[in-house]
Amino acid sequence: MKTALDIRGVILTLIILALIGTGCTSQTAAVQPQAEGAAKGQKVLKVAWWGNDGRKERTMKVIELFEKKYPNIKVEPTDAPNGDYWVLLAMKAADQDFPDVIQMDYKYINEYIKRKLIMPLDDLVASGKLDVSDLDDSSRAAGTFDEKLYGIVTGVNAPSVMYNPEIFEQTGVPTLSAGYTYEDLIQTARELKEQINQPDFIPIGSGALDFAYYLRQHGASYYAADGKGLGYDKDEYLSDFFKMEKMLIDEGLMASPDVINALSSDKDALIINKRAAFHTITSNNVGSYSSLSGTAMRLLPFPALKGGSEGNYVKPSMYFSVSSYTKQSEEAALFIDFFINDLEANEILLGERGVPATAKVREHLLDQMKGSDREQYVYMEHVEKNSSPIDPPVPLVSSSINTLFSKIRNKMLLGQMTPEEAAKQFRDGANEIFADAAS
Image 1 (cartoon, rainbow, N blue to C red):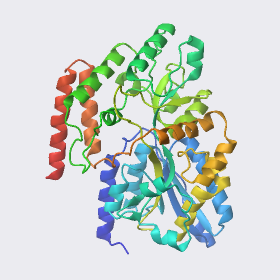
Image 2: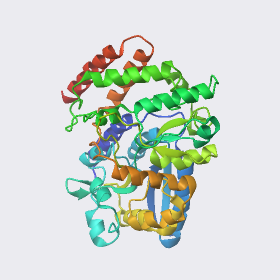
Image 3: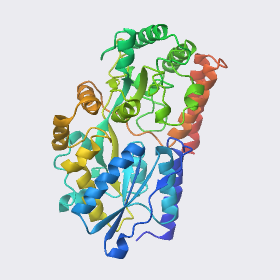
Image 4: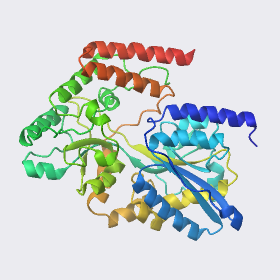
């Protein structure tokens, strides 16, 4: 039994974790009404996840199926947008209403384990309540920490560049293919800009490339393996990267921070409204963007670096974990088992949380899929053959580091400092943040 002191520690930890989230949005968290299952003699299982309306719709349908299979269990669902989700967990902890099943992110799972907020699942696997026999070895390993299983991977994804093939058909500009370089992307963006001579058309509709990916292509990493400092020692990496981004934005080839800040949701994205041809994205989101746009979007890896290393990697899109505070651990295990193994449930989910990590489900769905639903599966087959191991989860100070990076990048883009000055200021500022965290 957790004490009041333990609960206060949990609340403090979750508030800290909330601050390292992606940033609260203006949307209000969508919290479902309190379940009435307890009054009917049912076990009440609290399940929480983040995601958009499409994820909510599919998840609720799966919950209905689960409740039919297990009529003695009533699921009380809670969902929120990504940034709000972590704050919502803190609020739930403060109300001593912590969920039993928690959708968990690769970035934060280590912290939740260290704070003993989620429980190891090995005993539930041994009991047969949670069947992971068909889970890919790589996914099993991705959920294992200190030789204990803490997270069940719901699916895998990878960084990608999404593009709208209709724009290339309309303009006659050749599409890119895997192995293209940064120079190829820049040249293609210029050709598109010339062909679509409209002020509000910006070929690359997302507001940035990926510096961590760029570092991996140089054989380096954003953070040191121990999480106590930066993982690269040459400031030229960042100054060269900043020069490329500034050139793209100055030429109107990539969206500026002002343009991105004016967009409030996915449906406002430039590529959805045919104001862009490219958009950087995690691969499992291609289906929702295709639905929003009415166009079957396609996926490419990020550009290659001439003579560089492989930057791509297979990432657990998210996990399901079980709270250390739950009194319904067996019911939680049954829910997760149903989510990852039941074929009918996965015909509803269709890999929305990433390409399924269980071979039986993946093969079953792939046989049925067409068009944009199939796209992420084909893409992930390519990534699995052309990738390097994923970097460790980011350190707890990553939110402060990201804020510093954005602030310095914006000043550089406005011409208030050179890329070289920006790269040095970022290192100096990051070192201060790490030093403060260690003190």
